[in-house]
Length: 255
Image 1: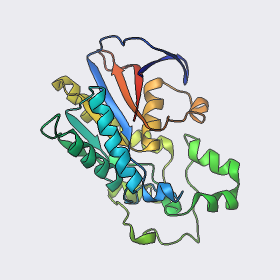
Image 2: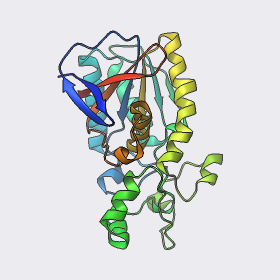
Image 3: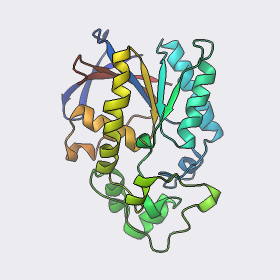
Image 4: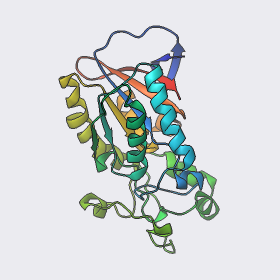
């Protein structure tokens, strides 16, 4: 069942079952399906990790939920990493009976938070080295960057390549969530929102922390509350925007 989520204050919401107002501007957002390193509980970031079989099935479920809820996008934006691109391709394949195929646009600006020398390292290793509180803070704090691990394994651990570009060199030891938002916003505001002027209905296929910082921006969430904000799992976000493209509210659909 659809829930309309109305901001009460900060990141707290009151859920009520009603028909949403008729806002013309809206977009969808999802996270990719389970990846191999999600399953292994390793820091993934910009490493090109494939989906697990479960992750592929999750992508199918996302597409079927889009169909059943009559939420068929006509343009998709995703990161350049394999796990989101594969998720997009599976969704597109399932949606083919409802559409001729949806154009997909990729950008590194939608990539997951880059973890620097932590990529490929099990989360348990960091818990044992720095403690649970440090690990929790590193994963949730808006400004904190990953620690530099001197004895880290090679960055292409497991034979998986790292996505590199000019920006990568400036943050090769890892990003904060603030960095993620700074490189995400120009793409969101100039490319994704522009399609609304063409009466498009975009779907953003991205990653956990990228989605978290975008929601922080939309909800005008303060830094303290952001530490406790968790994206609900296995949900499709449908975000409604006012005429000036400011955030109005969002609803969630299960898959």
